[in-house]
Image 1 (cartoon, helix red, strand yellow):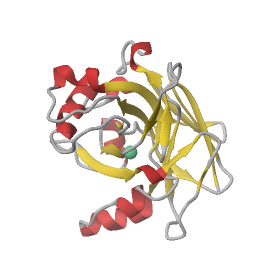
Image 2 (cartoon, rainbow, N blue to C red):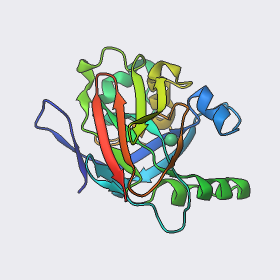
Image 3 (cartoon, rainbow, N blue to C red):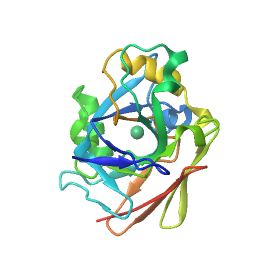
Length: 218
Ligand code: MG
C-alpha cells in the first residue's frame, strides 16, 4: 500500500488514484503551442507512479526527452461524488508539492495520433510528492508562489493564482466523473517554464508555505 503523510498529524493516507489536470495555466499552454480547452483536460496516474523526497526519477528507455512540471497537489480527505464547488474545500485534507514528470517526445507522438498519454505520464517514478500541509494551515491555496530549480537554475516561477480552473471548480468537475475517496490526490497543472532533465540532474521544487521537494534524475 502506497501512502502519503499529513504533517502535524499521525494520519497516513493510502493513495488510491492521482487525477491530473493539463493545460491549467495560460502561459504554459502558450509555450507548448496548445489550444486553451473549454473544459479541464484530465488524465490519471496510478499510485505506483509516486516517489518520495530523496528518491530518483528513472527515465524509461523509450524516451529521449523527460520534462519537469511542478504542480500544487491537493489531498482528498473525505468521500466526494458530484459535489458542488461551494462545498469542495470540506473534502480537502491538505496541500503538497508534486512533480508531473512527462516524456514530452512520447506525449507529442501520441497527441498527433489522438492516442492516450499514459505511457508518457504515468510510468513508475513519474510522480514525486512531498508530505502534505493540512488545509487549515493554508490561508489561500490560490495565492502561493510555485517554483522549480534544476541544478540550482530557476526554471519555473509562477503563482497558483494563475490557474484557469481553480480548486473548487476542479473538485466539482472531477467528482462528477470519478468518485473521490480519502487518499486520492489531484494535481492542478503546471505554470510556464517546463523543460528537459537528464541523468544526474537535481530537481528542487517549492511552493510557498508548503515547503520543498528534492529528487534526482537517474
Ligand atoms: Mg502537468
